Image (cartoon, rainbow, N blue to C red; front, side, top):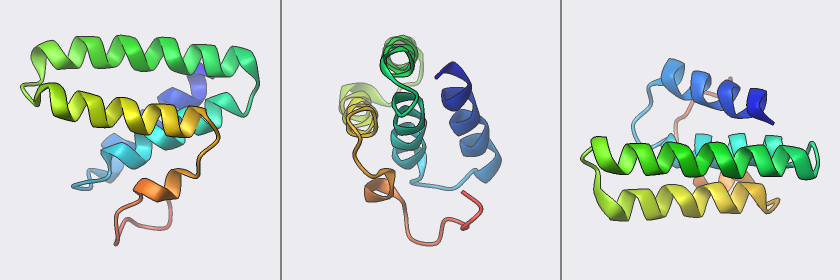
Length: 93
């Protein structure tokens, strides 16, 4: 699960595509959760730690953190990450 989360983060940084962060949050959690309960657990721990850290230093605020966590939970629960996919994001991702 941790590798899935890292790969989604790496792809998000590489894509550097405005408005795509929620898609990558959902995708990382989705991929991790598909590995089973351990993957879902790892995704939750990593997502919560990331959001707790970012909410204090990113300056994006509570609303962005809430939306990130919504995307995280959607993916972890088996929801299609493409719900958050922005138009125009290269098909490589």
